[in-house]
Length: 127
Image 1 (cartoon, one colour):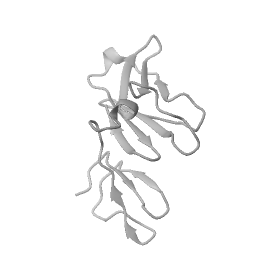
Image 2 (tube, helix red, strand yellow):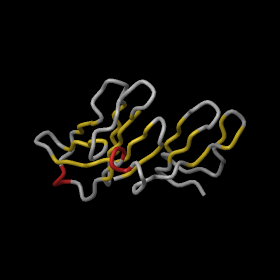
Image 3 (cartoon, one colour):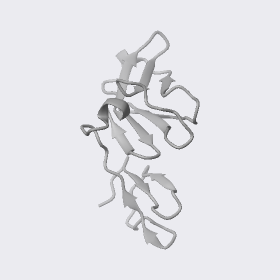
Image 4 (cartoon, one colour):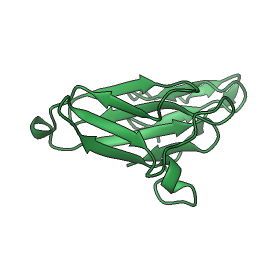
């Protein structure tokens, strides 16, 4: 069953969908059902992929990995997402960028912060 906030990917063309509102239909792309991406947290690659949330003077910074993730042409983080109870922020990254994103969030005003990152090779990760 499709749920709000789930991420789906087309295995043929690479389209990625973030479910904002749930409807009764099935998610299909290139005439094939889209793949639901599982959020990884603990895995062999977690030290380079799991998002790390830090509070800063400007808001919240999300770093990708305890050890910075590579940002090479063939292996990089495509986006970083930070979700609060009422807001979702996304920062798109490209090869050569730092594997991190800063968001203008007042941490004291938000009850829960969750972060997700997407690696073009190793998939979806959560904090």
